[in-house]
Image (cartoon, rainbow, N blue to C red; front, side, top):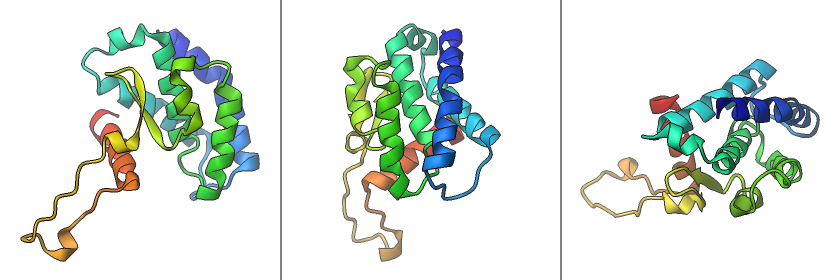
Length: 164
């Protein structure tokens, strides 16, 4: 329910921002309000993308996993690569006792996976990565070889631009 999501955010947001401010280095400076809005927008976008968001919201464990993933990609999404391991470890410590064991894979690699609300699973980005097919008719500079990075950033942009 929305009350569960709000309560979860309220009990973890300040601590996550404090950790970010004192232990991590951001690529671009942000305000606390921006981070909060980013988290809320990503949660909203993930749910709006679904055909039956109310049905999905009934699975509280799934929703908690999704919100934890959103913490990683909103509060922890704008940090230098060197800080990602610290933030991922903070997430493991903070959410390890809260998140259901069926979603443990998320805490093992929060930046290397996503929460698939349809299958109710944590899946690696490679599950979304399109196969590359070379086309000799495409100019060299028009070729984009899919990578894990292009896949995850395209996914995030798609969610936020189309559903956020």
